[in-house]
Length: 385
Image 1 (tube, rainbow, N blue to C red):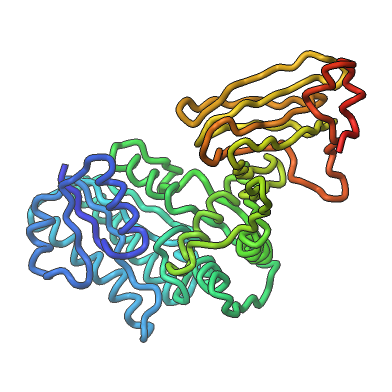
Image 2: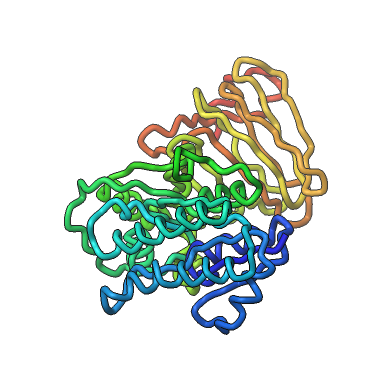
């Protein structure tokens, strides 16, 4: 299938083209402002489907709205007619087509032109009135509030919010691209005359700004947001795509002593905490238990043994672990436990806990796993220095 994409270097065009190629649609005619206009004839003659994404939204003069959003659409359709090519045509319009302003009128004119073209030629047309679209590769400080907020906040630059209560209807770029490829394959989401992206988020401007500032702070707090919320997950991915390229890296606090180190990696509000533990050869760490806190240990380098004992039992459970065979050991509440490095190199363990560490309520109680051999009493281990 030969696919013509106008506005190929724009925000939607770039994202669409890379995903088309991911899905093995490789015969793509990319048309943009820098393309030789003579190629439009060749592309319109051969195309099996047209994604018409080109348009003007921030012109120097209002007259450019009609020229870009109506004039080029007219030229495109006339060229298709010239070669009697009645392939399906998708048009990127806007919810502002309902409004009486220069941009809205130009978009409405483009829509009407396409519907009349369909009546004249019998060609299938798909008109999408997109709301605000957000995601990677959108140009900041241009016409996208989210792109601007992400870009500026990531660089500690000021942003301007006139009214935080303004409600925005938003579509994520990947959802939009998925819908466009569905349309290409004849599975568009159609509502009467128009087509639409089925997933739309309704959020206030103030909520968006608060979330983006929290994403910036999350690096200092070693946290990640609640990604069970689909909008938060997509906005977080969008924010990360605007980080300065020399600031992808950030430091963690390593708590070090002669035994090795312990470093918190990630905290979450609802999925616990991930840490990295490094033990020197011969070192035993742990010898404590928890009421509620549960953990998972994964040795990824080196070799050692993880020991557990139910606090009212003399029976010791041992698991020999190494980075040569990745195995997870669950540490249930009510079991005192330790981990010993049996190798001659550092042992690295990834540790997950079901709740972030709280120094006010640590839920951690010292108790040695290996009891006094003479008494065989777990109480004899409890307060051993």
